[in-house]
Length: 212
Picture 1: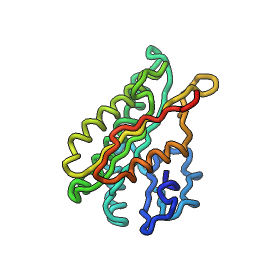
Picture 2: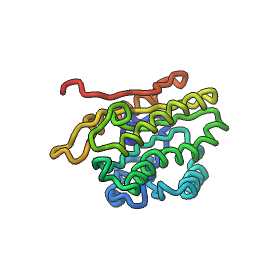
Picture 3: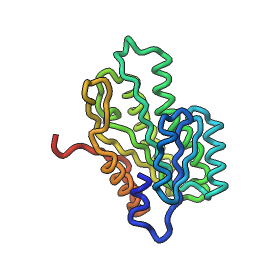
């Protein structure tokens, strides 16, 4: 998505920040080195104070956040009777609560400036049931509902709220779900939605394969 926002180069390129979890296995393999005007930062995505502090530090360095894009995709696939309460809570926290905390952190400055865009990338688990994914589907559906309500809450402040919903497909072996839409195509859809005239909000965009 970062690369798509910088292609083609705008006359005034935005500064992009990728905020990844402290425990991300991709910390040492992040694309920051080949994406210009991009900073990578890490914080605890389940800690409201850590997220608030991170956003305040970034705003002090680069100015107010005018676009937040969140892609919560933590999965724990098990039949419901095998799912522990800790696993259920972890899935809800890593997906729904993380998005909620980031929105809370960036919204004050967006409201003050009466300008901003908030994008959540969910999945078709938000709109259709997924086998052995009760916790994940619950989190994704809750994100969709939260974004729909948020849209009504902040539209009068000229803040756009968008949900991008790529289709899921079973990975080989059927043990987990992966996006049926390529990363590149999903990124293209996100950038298209964000770059629409500011008087227009694509509140929800479902991405499905043309040819099964």
